[in-house]
Image 1 (tube, helix red, strand yellow):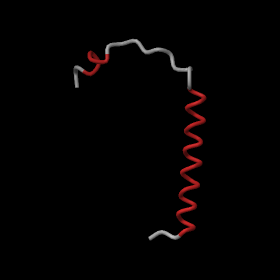
Image 2 (tube, rainbow, N blue to C red):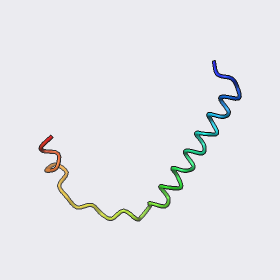
Image 3 (cartoon, rainbow, N blue to C red):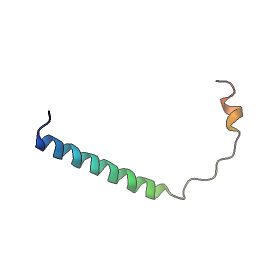
Length: 46
């Protein structure tokens, strides 16, 4: 069983990681151009 301190540290690390992910996603929002292509055609060879 983990110690209380280990649980707190793990929780803080997870919170920081999620905050970074949220910031990156917010920065990317609207910056991706619309993709044009045929996904079925691309995947046909697989």
